[in-house]
Image (cartoon, rainbow, N blue to C red; front, side, top):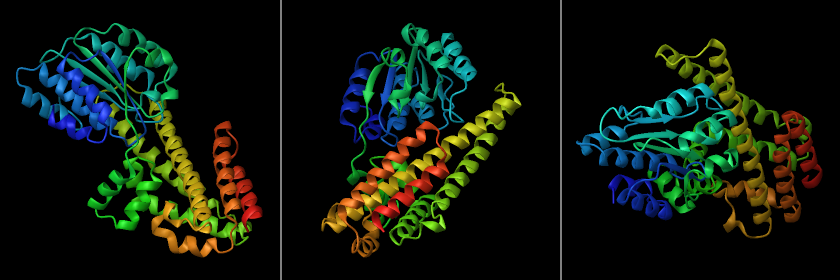
Length: 367
């Protein structure tokens, strides 16, 4: 077994068995690596691609080394990630569909990896069908997806599916502790991240810490009957700032790619940057809702005398103080209200009005 692939799939036993067997025989022409964010799909795809290219090279060690670099200089490894919220249709056509007909620059294989495949528009997915179904014999495609429902069934059915499970909280906790987090913070972030190492790392960074503080402030105001101060506006401001930062970074990346020769109009750059900003804003706001719901569930647990199951391990003193006057059943009902409001945002309702209604309802329930 490849040492690199073994390390990349250390906590994904089923995926490791499937990919190791594929390398021992003949890899399929198309794979779908499917599972939650932060579960190791990207690292596994890079390791698997490196082994495929190495096996078809006269100099396997050098081919493997270059394929494992990120970004990779290997000419037969094409890695496509969305700069904005979606993959651009022309980029999928140019860098994957049309490029796949050309023979390898070196060795005997070419590997195309499409990260966040669910971010391809239906037009791109339909255009990719023929390549997935009848690729040249030297081509292997790997699609990565964290949201399987965003992929057309016709695309998924043409791929061999490799499932990745959420990482156990104990694994995340160990990784975070090794990176310098305190035991309580590592335990809290690992459980709040729901198996997503990237999210756990975000929660321990400045942005994540500030978001947790905003959530705690909102719910404290709710319990005190002080929703007239509109505490939820801090959550909206936090999400807006994250979106603006992502938009600026995406614009810079798109402009650099344009200078490097990738054909893009000024409108393409502006639209792509705005999509990236909206996507990040939505992600941060969704995380804020999840943190709110988790805090209320923890409040119910502490009020019921079961604080050992609380996720916010590093905030137990605050939870104990708040739980003294809270009905556990009402706190659980509050968590359900939060989740219902989050789902309602998918219907394009006003975020600010939805948050205002939510916190006044929580105030009536809990204060």
